[in-house]
Length: 64
Image (cartoon, one colour):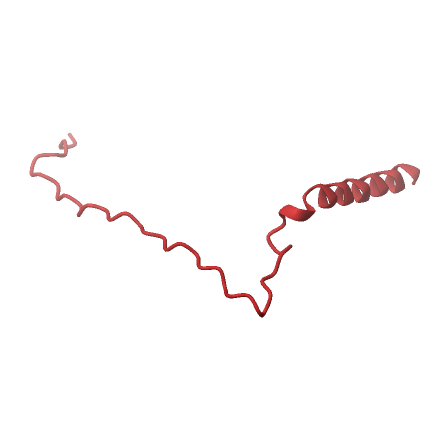
């Protein structure tokens, strides 16, 4: 019984320690103020893929 309680307490302390270490790195830490203009995100440009090539006749080996 004491092992379960100690493991629970240790897990709780580890979680609190990890939250404390990463507190300022969490994505929801700083919310924009209503008075500030929104920060513009850079536009993502995806690369264009070339058109698929058709298979040439005789490209596949015939099975015996």
